[in-house]
Image 1: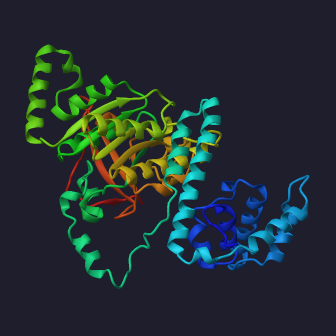
Image 2: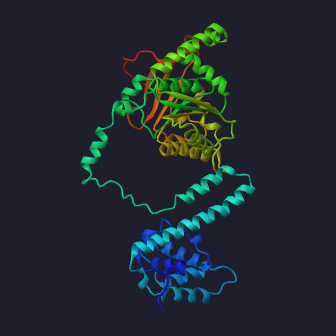
Image 3: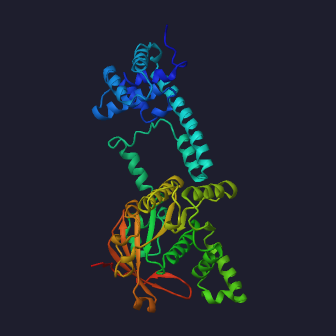
Length: 438
């Protein structure tokens, strides 16, 4: 009798996977061994994948038999494996005359089984109170699908590629607070889908730099979300008040100065009508990337607010989605998740990170002074450190050192000044040639 693929899809997948290399290559990224209901089927599929990964060809039935001898579970008989393998090998392949139809069935099978597995895992995660991981588990299951994007055809896509490259205007790049740094970056600034990081010891001005960067983006007519994991929303807003209006912090307590603040805010909004800002506080050590992602989705759904830039102050205060990691692994994973958020949401992400103890006494903070994890440094597109000794502190001076610039020049110093009254940070001489760290 002809084999009905729709009645027994799991045996059909195994038959084709071990006999048709094109089919196997197509379904290997979709199907996991645990998707199969029957434990023997799980072991057979593991055997096919194991053999292919080692020898880059499909296994014989003799190999699968030997593989199963080593992997069979206690209480199982080899006769069961041999009988099932023989049954799979005898299947009628006439139903596979339409390969696209078969692949579509496998894709539906993979989607269904991945979602079943995600739901089962989510029940356990819910019992353990690991709610942030549930979203990722379900989202990963929803992403199971054939990837039919084969990339760029280098020789045949020349015109389309250059049309895209030449259509990028200067205005599409996002400026930093440091004009010298912008001039050293391709296109004159940072791009969407990138991760930028400021590095400094405690108390030197990481959060203050991020606040200045947020205001810079506002006067570039961009929409900004400022996520605070340490300070209250009001305190962050108070800093931004001085930076954006040049009214000293101490004067903001006076009613007449607050009236001036409102007037200057009105002028800023009129001049930069497309800009907007949301400040959101999350409890220290409680928020994950999924928390921030959910917040951004709510802004989009309920207010139609889609930011161009997200500022996260700062990354050590985020909690990794996956629990049980070492601090090194957690910091690298958080950096990867931040960059993933930038790509997924098509925006620029700014964050900050601490130095290690050696960084506190360093004249120039470099990548060797990063705290907790060097792995986070590999992920970022731009990293700058803030450097300030006691004399510079007294004079309101500091130095920015470009640690890494994936799309431009790195390892040079930009002199800066800071007003402790208005909290404004800026480059001292925009025309000054970069000073090397050496």
